Length: 346
Ligand SMILES: NC(=O)C1=CN([C@@H]2O[C@H](COP(=O)(O)OP(=O)(O)OC[C@H]3O[C@@H](n4cnc5c(N)ncnc54)[C@H](OP(=O)(O)O)[C@@H]3O)[C@@H](O)[C@H]2O)C=CC1
Ligand SMILES: CC(=O)N[C@@H](CCC(=O)OP(=O)(O)O)C(=O)O
Image (cartoon, rainbow, N blue to C red):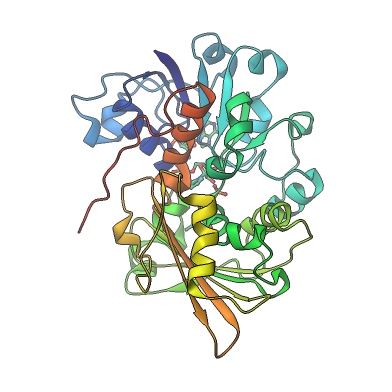
């Protein structure tokens, strides 16, 4: 049994980790970390866990937790994991960080976009970017895994095969993405109040969103060149889900079948990626509650552009599901253990 500690178990991403790991046959949660609910029953924080989780919440003492666990998930605000991790901890336990602390390889870029000082830059280079479908082999050997962001997971997976094969002109790539409000976490924030979000759609972080450099960096590795792109996120009145619509000029004349073959080349064995049938486009409802990424595309011969679309559940493939997928890989388990979550509808 893998002993799991979760720092930040009382947030939305942490709560989803608890939900998924409760059904994982090879994992046992030994630490329900919290800042605000220490010593209170976890099931009082999330009543869906009544009679399922009996434990009380604990603090964020990573040193103490490292002595008890095989893996620690940090589902905490930006900067916290970097401030807690050290060599002694990493020599005892694997860490899967759901925040952005170890995602971006250039510390100055991280500090610029996040506006905070990085407290343990010495571990950035060894951290593996945990986008399982792309970095599967490195994840298996990693002791520190940087779980990708929700917008980034969806945006990168949607464009990755075409970027890798040089089929799209990276200078023309534009990503328009929409997210449900759980993406902003459980903490009370004025822009996320019911009256601000309900019956409303709004762009935010325009030209400044912190996922921009993460997407640029990863698609840069894929395409073998520097990528600078426009990424515009929107908040939509739903609980979960991300839909990314991406536009780029094609570098050559290609048919539907040729592009489909490129997606199949990269994803045909990827359990959690579903390239949809011709003319069927991703919808957030069809992936909700699951670890799937649904993808499809449409060539527009009139403009010479391709329109690519991807949908995920931000809390599952965009956070906790992907984190568990990373854990499975890192511990030599089947990649889908505990993750056979059938999408729910309606
Ligand atoms: N929501 C999403 O869709 C996604 C989130 N993420 C990332 O996951 C992380 C968590 O996000 P999310 O769950 O949405 O956020 P929430 O605001 O819902 O939860 C934050 C969690 O962190 C804990 N926490 C806050 N401050 C501290 C602290 N100083 N010390 C210890 N624990 C602390 C909170 O504890 P308590 O409640 O007990 O005070 C809570 O458990 C973030 O880095 C986020 O960027 C990544 C992908 C998707
Ligand atoms: C709707 C909403 O507010 N979403 C969050 C992204 C959540 C996420 O995945 O981002 P990280 O893992 O990088 O924190 C945002 O825009 O900041």
